[in-house]
Every structure is written in structure tokens, then in C-alpha cells.
Length: 90
Image (cartoon, rainbow, N blue to C red; front, top):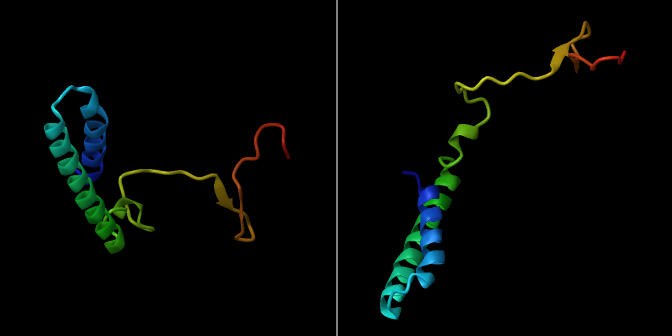
């Protein structure tokens, strides 16, 4: 499991624990452990972003299995023009 969903789950735990009726000491332990885990994961994500690992699928020029088609074609000058202007337009 990646770091992002773990942070989300810990956030839900922190939001729900006060309503579950646990003793105060137990709640405090859960909050401290969840807070420490969130801080560590946030640090690790920041480190990965600095190294360029967190956003690796979005690197410019990287080939993936996703196909994307744009609406641009070259005209006789070699300049880009829109492929189709829509119905009724010249």
C-alpha cells in the first residue's frame, strides 16, 4: 500500500476515535501514534517528491500504456492548426 492511502486512513481514525467512547488514556495513545505516523509519512512523501519519485508517472516524455489523442494537425506550412473546427464553421 502506498503512503497516500495510509495517511487518509489515519486521518479517518483520528476523526472517528473521539466518538467511539474509548477511555481518555487510550484515545491519547491513538492520537499520538497516529500523529507520529502521519508526520513520518509526510516526511517520506516530501523526500520522494524532492527526488522526483512521487510524481514519476507524470514525468514529461515518459511512455505509458495510456493513449491520448489531440485535436491538432499540421497544415501545408508546417504550422499547427485545429483538425476540425466543428460543424457549420469555415
